[in-house]
Image 1 (tube, rainbow, N blue to C red):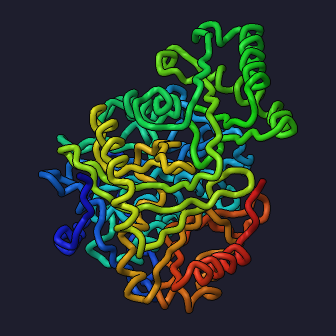
Image 2: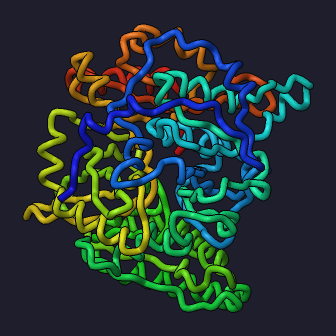
Image 3: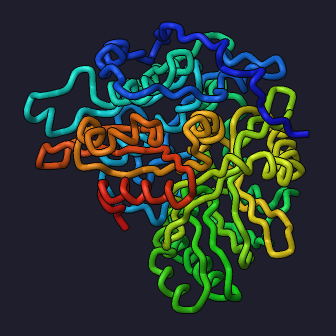
Length: 504
């Protein structure tokens, strides 16, 4: 059966070694030394990924994690080229510009995914200096994205801090012999590296199409595949005809239903269509995104079914939980946490909450399904941390609605239980990403009391400069605790009030 991690695997045995410089990566020890000395109490996790990778004969030193948040609009840094083989859809992502997305995807987002890594080797991609700094000859050295990262991890007790490496050039990255990479997401350039499993298999496991065609329980779904070859996808007339075929399929689908693109994150490719007005409102964007998806087809990926739409039955009045688990080298499923998602009016994920007092109850409720999910991905060769979203319908049936076969953003929430429980807090809330008009020092002046009390933890921070002005902004992530749900959400609203509104 699935097994909860116990105190016997506590990270007390972990050691923080001086990072070893691998060819093609920088450990940025100058940035580590330049990070301000923490002024708030440090966080001790109940366990880390390092502990989980040690289970069942595993060796955490034989796996390194290389991560980048999927970027909607191509490359945002010279350190990482855009994917052309492993393509992703982000139809509702706002156009925030290259610099902002670099700090969202390569900075803040990657940092918070690594927060519970423990003393494992983790990799972040370097980000160019802000144009304003370059133009005015005031480049920060070490660069801000490096010192910001070390400042985040300095909030952890020393033995639980990750071994951070920065990648200045993707084509020079090399690992030690015997070390495999666990990527998120699959990236084109990593096809030349040893990964935990073949990236094509990994890419398929992350696909909503793969879930619909699997034997896992999920809502009734129609898979509508593209018909064009890679060569035909270069013909504008054929592309337009194919787009029209997709559009007509959407127009003829019986209401209500859910549209899903095959490879999307944070809900950006999931649309709820409840009536004709809603259907019509999506048509222009649908044409554009389907056209873009078809044109992403090429000789390298045409066998990966990158062009499809899914029409899914709407589950009415169901409750949704997002599960985090770890799969050991022997295929054993280890329960990490069960959270609830907060989805905004546009259907975009904006955070997760967890009730620590209910974790044992929820583990027992979802263990049978968790074992099935673990067996499904382990059969393909996947091991490590992952998550999946499960909806429980009115009849009590548990349906998998999304598979996140990779380290999830809220994976760290489970091992924060003792941190919050010691402070009398039953709940915690993960919010990401937010944008703050200023630097971290300015933010800490506003919420110093909450940070000092351990009610708020900064788990991601990456500074940038406003184009043309030079003023500082920051992309950031937070964990917030509370004695009650109301207390926790109230502090969350204060944080929202101090940060900039999300673009729509």
